[in-house]
Length: 230
Length: 299
Image (cartoon, rainbow over all chains, first blue to last red; front, top):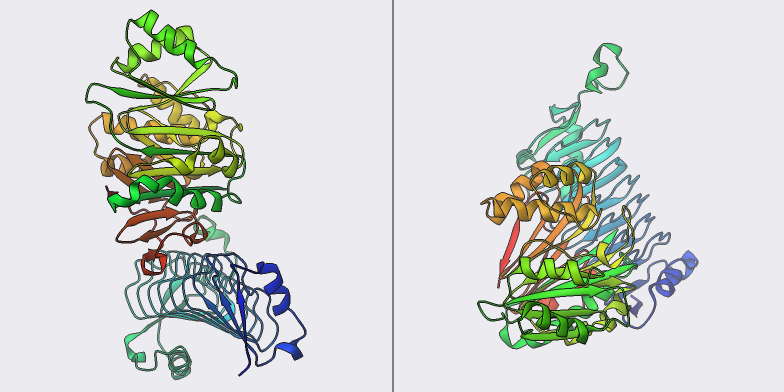
């Protein structure tokens, strides 16, 4: 495969990002490697081609944000908002991710091998997120659609005011948010879990070790008698 | 927004170059805090009966020689050491802090007393981090640990006195990224305890609150636990004492922090981009500190 290398110690990030926004016909199937990211913000944001991007090191805020189709791997860790508002494609973080990983993501797959910070998958709109470690408090807040698989633990207020997203958690949950409850895992749910474990490099993990959480659907409609609870 | 940096050098051979190691960290936080910068560095201790007084004046042509001379004439006490950098000076004497404070207020009201301690020197001023660092030769600093800050003011004026670090007591300082919503009520509460304030800055309230708790008998950990109860708002706080650095983030982790632990040093910054240049950073353990947890590193 053709591979192009960019060194952010020598070239401004804007130039690299502008190249990554070139016509898809120039980028499809190409492997682009980015060296010395050194925590810079906004690396590889807004990609919309079938490029394969590898970032060798730690990235800053919004790495691979708004991704479409592209496959982005970050060899190190990332700051806040990795793959935020992703539409499709795949983003893989080999280290840890800071707050709001995969926030409002519509589609695609975000894989984080380490821990994710607070508010992971906040307002999730249809993407899949697999976290190898634990997630911080208020994760999946108002998550509307999509799936989260957490191999470690979850912090406080998991799935607060959740709509129809599925949250598979293997470890402990410190507390559930309002209207989030344990669900019975159907065959269809189990199939989704098995598929996500396989696609994220966790095919050896037993789906039976997970608990499914979802919406109790009591907050869907305003109820004046319960106004104090909102 | 603001940027914080901290560096504790474990390898004694590297302590002579702490300023040089730190400089790219501070400059790396320019986007987070372009209007003022400052740092507190902990170097060699003065004699057991001596104290260092970090002084600042807004007058660029201030006559420091005259101050040093008047100090001797009025107080009958020799200045043991007098080190001047631009409009900052560090004065070393064996006189009691109260005596020096009262004398300064009476004879040199335009001179601000930034800090008192046996190890700590403080420099802070308005300007970009690079400008402030050049003004006070930050690259030449030596010491075992330091705490630095770049400020983007959101709640009080841009003046040298409002820049961080803030200090209270002796050999104790604090920098803050965030904002406190209950700083005025905290200030009123502390004023009832007889504590005086120099600015209307929210961070000064947090700084004086924690120092007051420790004077009341709390250790740092207990003082910070009281801090979690009393401080309302967003904060990542980095504190320096004579022999340690301490870090806490608010329970919602609204403000960032990244830590790199290496055999030779511990480095803390708001973002990784301020740590990326550090020697052998690839072999450091890099992690994000958890909210509401206290991290302490000893020299």
